[in-house]
Length: 138
Image (tube, rainbow, N blue to C red; front, side, top):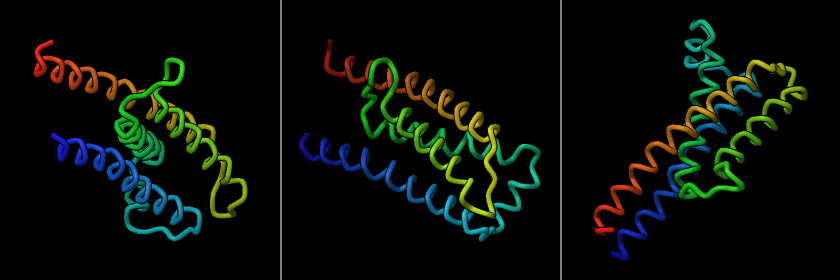
């Protein structure tokens, strides 16, 4: 039982931290105009940049909410608030990088990703808690 709890705690830290490292690398490459093949592929897809924003920040929301075990501040998951704040700061910081441009549509895509993946987290988290309760016989 204790090993399972330690393993679960490790996952709750490792998954969001790993994805944050990937997201940070993507942001760094974009800030330094060091575009690779993936940037060019996303650029070829209509609204690919916006879709990528929604998906990347959405995945980060899901993993961070998982990491915080769904804890909420008022009625909103803490992980969702943190990711939205980070996305907003990252977008505003683009004023200071000559290779980047501030875009309200990027913020809108971030918000869409945060909302969709928060809802998905709530749906799947509720099922996981229901399954856990059922196993314990409550």
